[in-house]
Structure formats: C-alpha cells, structure tokens
Image (cartoon, rainbow, N blue to C red; front, side, top):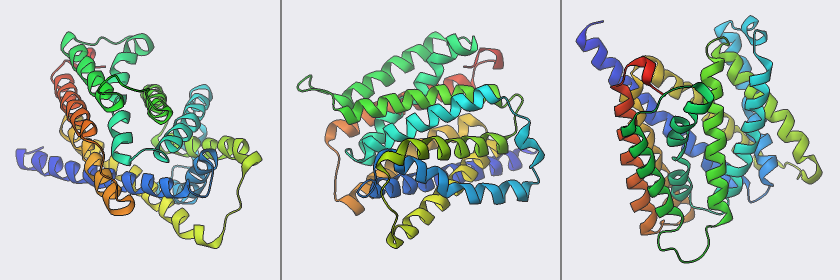
Length: 296
C-alpha cells in the first residue's frame, strides 16, 4: 500500500472513530433519558432488544448466517452475563452522574485490560505501561474523591465496576476473535443480553407508551451505527492511530450535559479526565511500539 493510501486510511479511521464516539454518546444520552421512566435493568433490556432487528439485517446483508452457529458457547455466555451487569451498572450510574464524569471514570477500562491481560492471557506488561496504568488510576481517584472529604458515591463505584466488567469482556473478545466471526459475537451478545436482562427486569417492568417509540428507535440506530463505525475505524487504520480519538467522547458528553441537562461538571472532573486521557494515549502509543508478542 502506498504512503498516500496509508495516510488516507488513517484519516478515514480517525473520522470513523469520531463518528463512533458521537453515536455512542448519543446512545448513552438516550439511555439516561429513559431512566426517568424505567428501572436500569429494563433500560438494559431495551437497549439490547431495540438493536436486534438491525443486527439481523446486517447479518443478512453480510451473508453470515452460517457463522452464527460456529461459536464457543462458554465464552459467549460469559460475555452475556458481563454485558448485562456492565450495562445495568452503567445505566444506574448515568442516571445519577453527568455523562462527562461517568465517561472519565469509565476510561479506567484500557488500564484494566492491560493489567488483566497478565493473568487471563499470559501476556507481559512493560514497566512503562505499568507507570501509565498507575497514573491513570490516579486520575480516576481525582474524579472520584479529590480532597479525601466525604465518601465515594455509589454511582462512581458502579461506573468502576462497569469498567471492570467491560475489561474482562474485551479480553474474552480477544479469545473469541480467534475462532468466532464478528457477526456471531455481536448477535449472541445482544440477543443474550435482551433475554437475560428482560427476564431480570420482569418483576418491575414498566409499560411502554407511544412516546417511547422515538427514543427506542434512536437507541437502536445510534447503537448500531456506533458499532459499525468503531469496527470500521479499527479495520482501516492502526489501533495506535485511532485509539487516542476515542477520548473525544468526553467532548461529546460535555456538550450533551450542557445542552440537555444544563450541567457543567466540577473542575476536578476536568483535571482527572486530563490525567486519564494523557495516560491512556501514552499507553496506546507505547504498546504500538512494542513487538507483537509483548503487547497486552
């Protein structure tokens, strides 16, 4: 591939990542609005249920029906359980926190993935990466509790737990990607979450009304196109190029907080987010420079 073609792919990859972050931020804003009418577990179920028709259309367009059944069920079931727990915790938290603050805490997940890759994948994390992980954790502490006064909120702890669930799920995706198709991973994850979260939500299920149809459609479309664009970003451009732009979600979240909820996060959130973003970008760049065998 020519130098110009590589640069063009990098630019397209960055654009796809920026769009993915926009779509996912809009999706999270819709979920935050739905928490005014529904419990977190029902919103989790609705998030998955609303996306299933579009996923089926995508599988049909790709002609990937046969690949849906060649799967490693144990890992898929693990991802489903983690997905339900992660979404329920995340939705519980964003009902109580500004999106910007929730995102800042959630961005501990890249550091958790790097750390968990040692016991779960048997991979090695370099000393410089450990320093980045430590600094990133410091940034999370700034967001959660900068002065030492008061207690860490339950919502903040919920986001931390959701980020850890996401990290373990991401590692399971690495294992699944060796044998299972991307279509099967997306379909079984969403279908399983829809069923399990739906069953768990049944005791407190609130009736849907006509006014909920538009938010549910928005949930389906933003989630679907977010998944497509982030997949395309990593397909056409190196991870080290596009990963730093994942933090643009913080800017989208801040805009949504101000426009929809008229909330501006406290200064500590911006300071902590800056520490987390700087550490995350350094971690991504450092890992990109390592030999393939040494990357987490």
